[in-house]
Length: 114
Image (cartoon, rainbow, N blue to C red; front, top):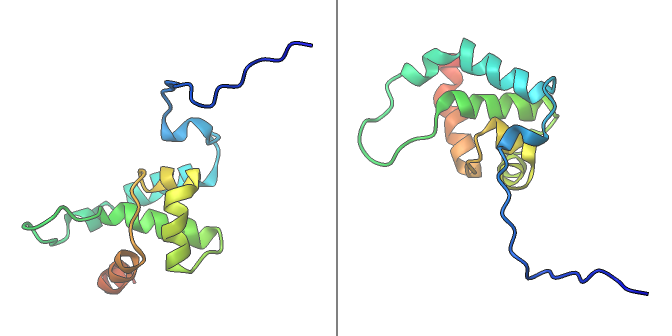
């Protein structure tokens, strides 16, 4: 019997977008669109103009809303999911915020959102 040769060293080239594996009617798409539209004013608040580029507040909020929808309230888990889970990568545009970044965002925007 002849078997196909499995060559794990073989290079492949695949072009994929983040949203290729996510259904059109998935809740993460709705949450991302809703937050980006309704909370656009968060991006216009006074964020520092100097230093490293900051994370986009609306994207952070969308990430936290989606995590809350999924029942996850642990910041370290959310940060880890942004590395491995395609849904969280889509919601946060394939950026991996740290646990501390999420905590600082909540502390800074709580008065604005409430």
